[in-house]
Image 1 (tube, rainbow, N blue to C red):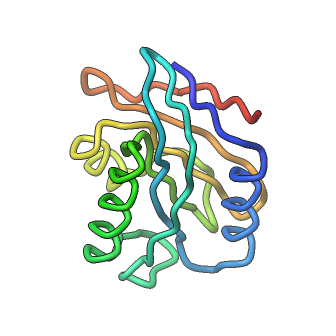
Image 2 (image 1 turned 120 degrees about the horizontal axis):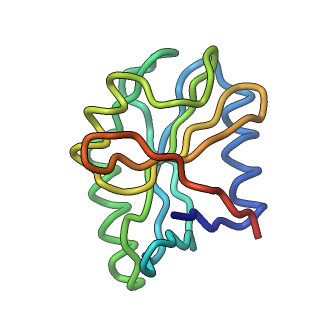
Length: 132
């Protein structure tokens, strides 16, 4: 599996994460083509928990973002968030979220590192990230 994202989009997520002590989060919109998640748009969503260790997207912003994406013919292909003080790997809470949202999960840390993952048959699988 592969997550294709524009370099500028990935860089913007990393830069916002590096400047924040709280977890940042949002959607990756685009199209899924077989084993490839093609990201066409990144949308930051407010973390309503204001927490450095967990996130919960604001529900109204989520609905607005999804509606706008659908109007453009895009779908949710991924969710991104940051881990300001720990490695960019799924946490226990992330795993529960991955069960609800079976898309690619892009996680960045506060140092510019990142990884993407999917939950498949109850196991976390790493997704290669291709910045184009």
